[in-house]
Every structure is written in C-alpha cells, then in structure tokens.
Length: 260
Ligand SMILES: Nc1ncnc2c1ncn2[C@@H]1O[C@H](COP(=O)(O)OP(=O)(O)O)[C@@H](O)[C@H]1O
Ligand SMILES: CC(=O)N[C@@H](CCC(=O)OP(=O)(O)O)C(=O)O
Image (cartoon, rainbow, N blue to C red; front, side):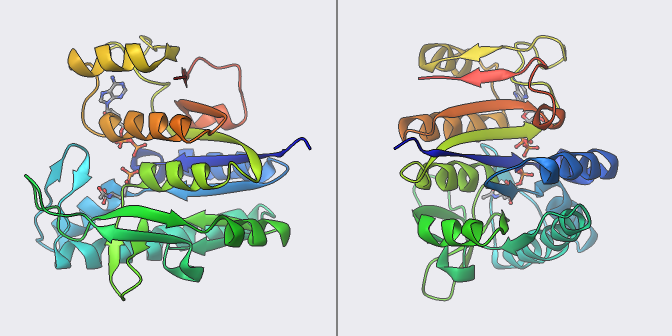
C-alpha cells in the first residue's frame, strides 16, 4: 500500500528571533494540508536570556554546554515562551497545534551524553521516539510542535540539539509515512562561501559532504545540521532539504537537497 506523505519541518533560532519571518513561516506552515510536525530550536533566545541573567554560554561544535543553570534557562525558553507563542500563532491560523517536549507523552527518550573529551552537561542523545503517539495526535487532526527538550525516563530533562530532534522524529515516522524533512533557516541553503549569500550548493551527497567538512566550508550550527540530514537519510527518510523559511510555500526557490 502506498504510504501517506508527512512533512517534518524544523525552524531555528534566527527565524524565531525575527518576528516577521516567524509569523510568515507559521502562516505558510498552517496552510499546508495533510499530516505535519513542527520542531523548533531557539538557541539564540536562550543565549540572550542567559546573558541577561549573567549566566555563561559555551557552544562546542554547534552544541550548548548545558549546566544545571543553563538547563533551567533552555527549558524556560524552549518549552515555555517559544513553544507556547508558536502554538498560539498556529491556533490563530486555524492549525490545531499541540506544544510538547520529548517528556510529554514520553515521545522522545534520551540519555545524558557520556563525558568523553568534552563534558556537555545536561545534553541528551536520543534513544527512542514513540512514533505511534505522534501518529495518534495526527490522527486526531492535531499538529505536534516539539521543542528541543527531551528526558531520560528518570525525571531528568535534557537539552538536545533541535536539528537532531527533527532528524530522529522524521526517522521514527518512516514505517508509517513517506517522510519529507525540511530544515528551514534564514539563509537560502548551504553556502560555498559564507560571505556570499548567492553561493548556494544545490546538491550535497556523502562524498561532497566529506569534502566540504574537510575544507572547513561547513562550520558552527551547520555541522550538526548536515550530520543530522545524513543520519535521517541513512534511516530512510525519503527527502531532506535545507532551505530558506519561504521554501515552505515556494518549492521553486534555490535551496540545498541532500542525498546519500
Ligand atoms: N557553509 C555554510 N552555509 C550556510 N551556513 C553556514 C555554513 N557554515 C556555517 N554556517 C552557519 O550555520 C548557521 C546555521 O546553523 P544554526 O545557527 O544552528 O541554524 P538554525 O537557525 O537552523 O538553528 C548559519 O546561520 C551560518 O551562520
Ligand atoms: C544541545 C544543544 O545544543 N541544544 C540546542 C537546542 C536548541 C537549538 O538547537 O536551537 P537552534 O535550532 O535555534 O540552534 C541549544 O541549546 O542551543
């Protein structure tokens, strides 16, 4: 039997911080028919709140070193203000959204990252996603909206990169759906030259990915994003794109498509 299509979209901190871009993205997202899931980050907002509270922020390879204080800040920011504002905006646009952390309904179970060279603190690596629960919400006509907070099943909340949450949720749905994963952000795609907004690399396969990483073209948040794209493809997610937030309504704009 042919599988139904589902869209798994992720928006990051730069879109969330840009009120106009966020409102416009959510309007377009709300309009999309059929099953869909939204995952959001908000790293920029968490860093701003930490600074207002005089709490140090440290990122390594695009991931936040998460102390107990940082964890409280990210939970307040991601699961609180950002998640609820997004849900309210989607409701305004007649999209029946439900805001969740990975702890809610036990959808995203993670484990605290073991200390190897770096102690990331309360950062979680995803162990399991409960696709049946996500599908249950969708069957009820509800659009799940996930933030990047997960849990370990023993009462500990954890901070997980939002791109990873999106990749894992997308991968969990492949037995039920034909899954498209869109990473939407402020640029047009992966750039050959970060200072030239038009230098969009339209196709990246595993070989090109290795070359780009080696040459240092890929840096900061783009490192985990691409890793997560390839993880999703290896787990049989059908299509993966990195694109500007407006890609959600206009599939003809230039962007980056990933393949193995
Ligand atoms: N080659 C590249 N092409 C595009 N962006 C890149 C590249 N290398 C590094 N980046 C950085 O990665 C950022 C995207 O990662 P991140 O900030 O985690 O995104 P998001 O807003 O989706 O969370 C871009 O804003 C850019 O600063
Ligand atoms: C472990 C880790 O790094 N978690 C991320 C989660 C938020 C996120 O990924 O936000 P963006 O999508 O806006 O970057 C962080 O705290 O920054």
